[in-house]
Length: 147
Image (cartoon, rainbow, N blue to C red; front, side, top):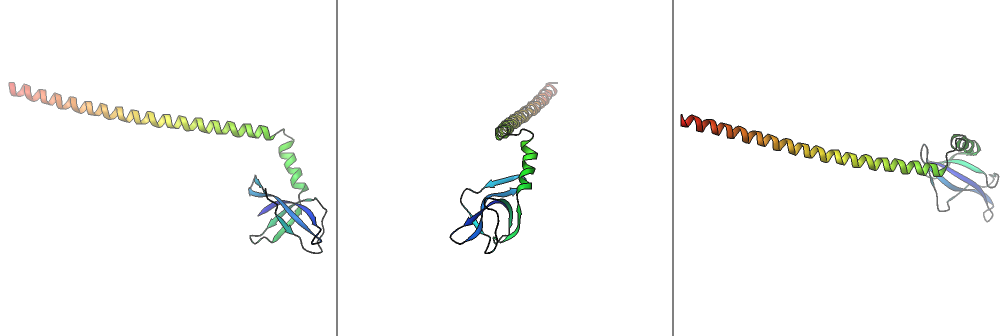
């Protein structure tokens, strides 16, 4: 799994560690890691303090890949921040999409209700037609009996 992390020096152990900041959930979806989670880099490994890195962890928590995050951050800046996309704008779009979804759900429910009403009316009309046929057949039998 891919994580965004920051390098820190653990003075007590005299070695560097990574503080996990965020975890990739999907291609363009990341989750902030609210609690402090650290991974030791091991003795003899040194990195710049406060450096942002992307770290790929195995299912057992072992570091599989570690790279500086500056290119990744610059890609984010170029893709999202140079076009004027703001968190507020994204929130408004999400709210608009939710309102649209709710509106479509209401329209769908209304259409389903109307469909049921039409089906009920069709059944009523068929019942009336059957009743009229029986009534006509009854009248013809009565007229035939009178003749």
